[in-house]
Length: 257
Image (cartoon, rainbow, N blue to C red; front, side, top):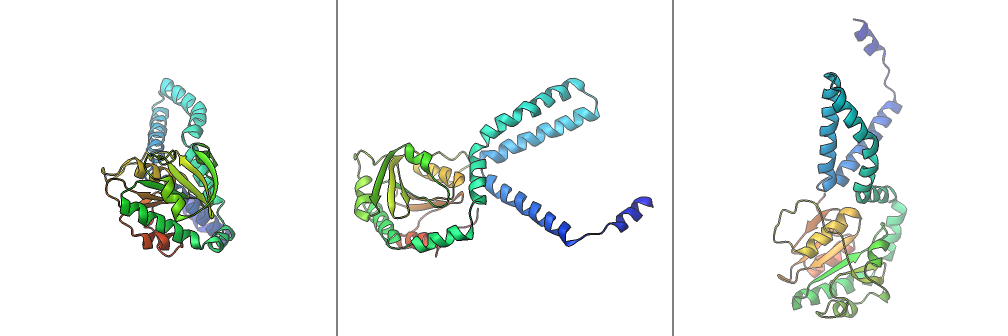
């Protein structure tokens, strides 16, 4: 009876609702970030250890609780290293503001046409390629893995870079604004489960970067000449050059992650 009176005396204000909404939104965004990645599997393992620790505490199993206590004490540093890509992506998403998106729209122009034309040429010739469009998340680490460039985006240059047996054809091209800033760059392979087993290394690399950043990654398959685009951890295939141009201009959304 006393507990019932205490519950009835509670007063819920708009501040409580705001706090609940903010916490729910943060958890939702975190779950979306780690969905489909190895981080979700690791998080499941951590929850299992927490459950074992709780059961051991209830049963007064001192050795198990002591050992798990050591794991929890020093394991946090290991988790920071393991979750480094996800933490970096989360901080980058938090840093995105409507102002930066407005500036990105202003920058849009003929670059989309040049990229779409290059994709059409490469697909028609059956030449494999992977083109990365940097957005809000800086890709300096991946640019450093290849050859730094400062060249204006053009269909002729992109096609030349990916010509077989050229020095920079084996790797990704990274575009910042209207400038090619890197070629022959190495991208991280996705650690998640890929439903289509026919996808090659280029597609896994595109997904890997899309999981760690907000970049748009265009892939031209060398085997099938099919054009695919990875963004926000999702991969959409069988796109036409016109659809690629519309996607870069923000007129063709990808399915949600």
